[in-house]
Image (cartoon, rainbow, N blue to C red; front, side):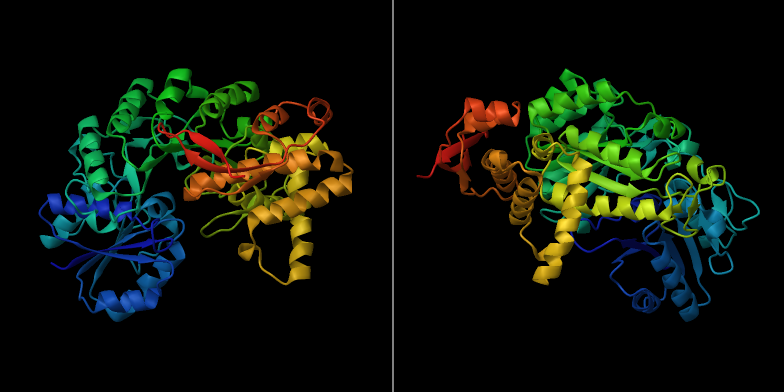
Length: 543
């Protein structure tokens, strides 16, 4: 039987890793069922993709449907069905499991709801035997919904170890590495808000073997799929120890809970090449309480300080438009997040994902949102359209000025020097950029972000009357821009500083006036950056 699995990732390149389809293909292979996997991206024409598949004369086609590829998959399915009518088509994946009633079973033959490895094998085995697929998680009519029972993870075949992922494990590629399934928390905006509030682990022996393969394949970056990686401290330390022992060049990205950090865990993270991503979402107590999240701003900041003290890069996530959120609350959340000095801030408008608690609460909070993917908020009583537009402007400024411009280590200091909140500085930058582009006729993506930041800071300090601190502030910025450049490209920048490194270290902790009193004279320095024998940064005089 000719069986095809179809995936569609966001884009071609390092981020194109269709884990869901690979897992299903691996499970089928373990059951002695061969399936072809056709990976596409959103850049591919769904009609051309359907033609390509139709020419292969498939008999059964499975679709891996996510929030981001839903529209593409809908067009693909219609085109494929028009070309081959005598064909079994089924859909699974997070979008099918979360929003089954939005699928058309006059076009599809059935849906797979829940984790699909075992139930897809069951369904296709029935088809091969000439029987109708049935059982929990196999939906042939929308009047009778059921979800597949969660499989025992130790019994699932590894798509890495059985080599079904090999075509995606190119040198330098980015890979998704699944370590757990489930989550013990029930945040209202997440699929897990309706889950079992439990965590299942893949066996450590399997993870160790998979790590060896990833190292052998020389992949560049690995995103760990575990939303609460540091939930089980002992397991976390064991895995981090395993990664540290191998000392590979792979860069690992973990999702963690800040409140569960301690010195021992922070020390362990510091031993490997990694970055951490942390879901702050908001710093407003009322907003977070409604979202089923606990938050202590002082404790959170104390835990984050463990990372900054060890130089561990981390990013924070924020959501715009959660129930009870306002523009003012969002701006305060941005200010709080910037004060923690993250390396990046990722901001998303609220998506009221089908199957989540917040989607069910939409009417209660009078939130209007898109009825189709990506289900993003349109407005709410506390966050009207105009306020959402302003929040979007702030988000775009964060993306360019803060994250792309790697301003995490100096924006808070600029805020203190000019007595302006970070959110206000970012909105001022947005206005500055609009005028700058209008004058130059250029595009934001084509600009040298470091030069743009310097031009803006000069303009801002002149406008606000703080030119006496300009040399110190710009030297402080150039120092951190240079460090960021070196970390990204491993090439030495040329730093032209108006103060010594010791003075700039003091500048971080002194007021502007106190700094000028301690360092009344400038000392021009030109420095490069390299590494010493143990990998630490070394600043080298160039003149």
